[in-house]
Image (cartoon, rainbow, N blue to C red; front, side, top):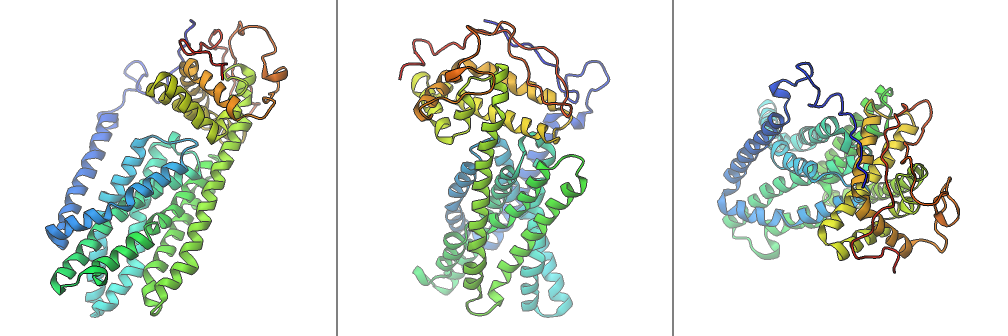
Length: 465
């Protein structure tokens, strides 16, 4: 079996030869990761101590047990939104940890300091609490949460390609922040009940749980998602559009602060101010943003179906793969089919094939629109290499999914004969070539692998239903 040729390493990587290009010690990956993990761990220990000091040990444990309840639901929801091109779990872990530890620590320290300063300046503690909640807290908290989105945008740029990525990173960050904040509020409410003797549905703990966990678990994610959308718009913008790339995240952050301020100030709008803001503003905004994200996801699937046929013509993908990879149901069938016949490892391999193919479609889409970065050619070759390494497992599963979900007649792509067949007999002798994009995209060398027909599963006929 032919092997895939090696491609040049990215110019900015560690593989640059000679003394020139060797990174300084502080630029090495393990140093950056170690510093980040240490920062988050120290922030977590400090915020843990501060929350426990305010709630007491028993209140902390009660708050922790109640605050964790909405977390799996929210994480699952954001992961579901990211199913078309799922980002790596490490980004989500970082986002949640930043929200729960670093952002929460910044918020609790800055908010307490600002509230005490206002109370001292105005000699009115009640007014200080109101001003702190409506003016200071939204600015501090949304800025602290936005820092996580900014870090992923800057240092994990390959994983941050559009609006959905911004929504997911921002939402998971806000979920972590709300988790820590809920521990504080619920633990404090429990302590209040312990001192006043409140219990049952009439207790402060039950009321706090109903408002923060049952009615509005999406509040903090909803605010910060606006910032994520701004960064997503910046990710979709061309590099030469400097003003748009700068103003979109800033505009999203300002909207997040404004919505957060309105939410915090709803209690000052009268007896039913909270419910009025909740029903007339928060719920419609949540529905609108949910529609936007789902519409964006459908648009991403359409991009996959429109961009991948170029690689079919070049010989890198099978005729039916753009159709399968552009359908969530077909993708799931392909993963399940591989898992049933070859086990979990094969299912993961097919899932990786789908993710790499989707990233390839997005990359080509940006290239056709003149939004490709300087590493376009290197990234394209890397993605094609990943697809090539998994083709023998993935192609039979994708062919099965196509038969199970496709229309009566299989799709026919340009350059192919009837019934989706290659216009020649047997396997191509020269290997697939990289598709041509036009003058806006750099030309590539002829380094393409020799290959034969994709091998089916051992002992399995992929064309048997």
